[in-house]
Image (cartoon, rainbow, N blue to C red; front, side):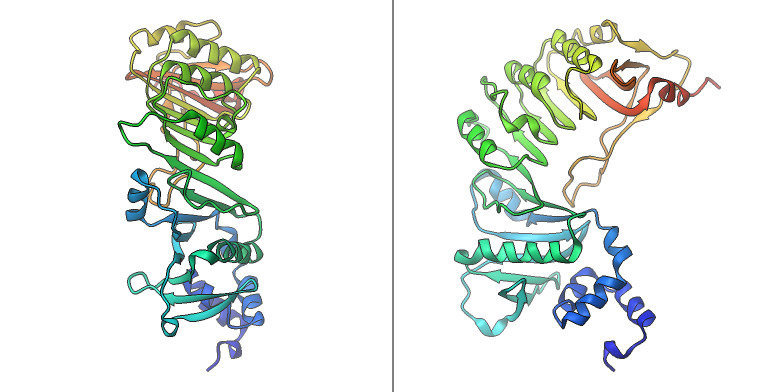
Length: 365
């Protein structure tokens, strides 16, 4: 019996229990089928927070040490595998079935392992094929879903498409010094990054005007004093984690003072710095403007959703900050928890005024 012959409620029940990858193939049966799926799955689609284009795990490892400009991507809706895209040179047309994707005919077949639909295209067609697939998602899910392209190297293929954010890892060889000029050229030519993981082993500081500091989320390895100082002055994003860094305590105090005065860091939600030379780190807690909760009381724990995670990240939130010390921003009375622990400086901004924050403090038992 044809699916279209069933009552609407039965059709909806069937669709509700189908994987996204199977729904994807059904979309192409007819315009009526696409409309039916779209209307019956409104609530389900609203639960999708993002579409993630991400390289296969073994190719991510390969890209870490060597540029791989081919396209072999997995596409996820949230954390569920949806489809794959693969650049190939295979001329065996009989092993494919063809679908018209937003005006472009693309070869597909089902993966032998995952059973997901895989789009195949020639290297010369990769830009138009990826654009057609992305536009199809935009047409179906709309622009309320976040679309993220994850790359492992600035020289990887990175499409420039509407409503597409970029998450990139830049991991150089251990013996290689970071080429700042090449990096700045890449940042200037790219959209503002959603997330950046970078090994930044250099004595040079990135220019204050660089879009590097506008990245929503930064995770940086091996920051030297000059680059830490620049980041603590110019960062305009929401979340930053710095590992194995050297910095001066006065720079951390200056950072807190600039946040407290409302001069800078208006979007900041979370900052964590692992410091190599932190023997005087506790002096930060004695700086002007730092307030203290009674030691007998239990302070609230700060944590926020990470700006961007991979589908393999099992920790969706930032590391918790539970601290008896905090500062208050003068412009709006917002609170930030400040923690010094295990040679680490943590700073977590609350969406609460000081009065609201203190109401969450638990009295001693």
